[in-house]
Image (cartoon, rainbow, N blue to C red; front, side, top):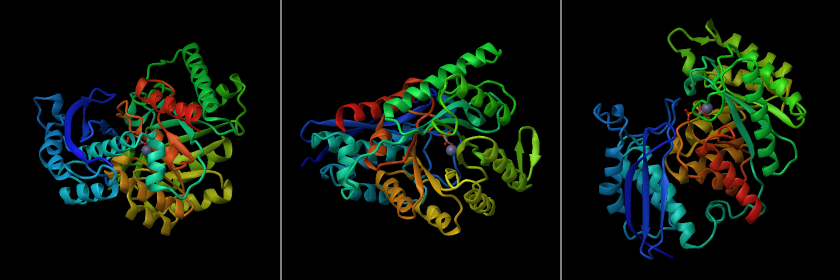
Length: 420
Ligand code: PGA
Ligand code: ZN
């Protein structure tokens, strides 16, 4: 047992070069650990709010000095002397200290960095790996460990690059019955082949925010055709070993007033988008469609989910901006059958305990869940341990490229190789 002696905080840079928050949790035993907050570019309307300084003289207004001082001046005094393993009570206290529904007072960035740092400090204090500490704390009833399937975002569009592609993420999914390490190998081999094909056909292989390429391919169909070509090229059989996935992030090209999607240069209605997805499912080995509609276009979510069940029950309709790792929104979606899977981003919830509640709500409704990074990341690999602790079916941590992305995959390979 160990008590919190102090909490420090500082401004660090994320993978886009924007400031973000790191909290340093110091225990009375001298053990210390850090936690940090990632940041999204395509931020859902309903997610917990990060606090930024809006001071145009620093980092174009993106500084997080206020969030850092909230940790030092408001959170640290409230947590000093608390038992570090009391995660749930600490998270409740953090929510109370903030006192707003979307954590806009202290900032979800300051709250999350502390919440995750507390869990890491507790695991160090108990001398157990983080995933084991999280398992014992939140899921003691689960017996075995199973590693998640990685979703590799190898082509970056939307707000994550200047490729001009409407869809934000094009994912390659090695879904065969392979070890995690072998799935990483398949993802990396596809990635090399993609680079080769792009360079031979005159496209740029420069990278977007999540490590995927950002070629100006012009249309979704073109990307999917290149994906099909690649799978043959690498001898990974399509629809058996390798599947495709999208994160459409449709809220970002939707006009709520006109109820129109501005998709690939044309104005499209929800019905048109629905038919497009159905056609893609018929034509390609598509396993995941994330955020196919706007975060408030509830009716079409349910329509697509119902129709996809008939077409191919293995296809997952994943809610990210729709659900924002929020238990209340998830409960509504479960009732309305709006999707059959949820993206889990700890910084959308704001604390570790709320993130866990969301995972548990999804699991008890038989929904799948995807533990996810953000497009602006740090080198913190917390989500890898969270995925193992919760037996998550999937993890989304970008392409097998860029240090902050491969850090997550490397941590999962380490857990597989040395601990399980
Ligand atoms: P974001 O993108 O981190 O920019 O929100 C990730 C996603 O939409 O899944
Ligand atoms: Zn998303």
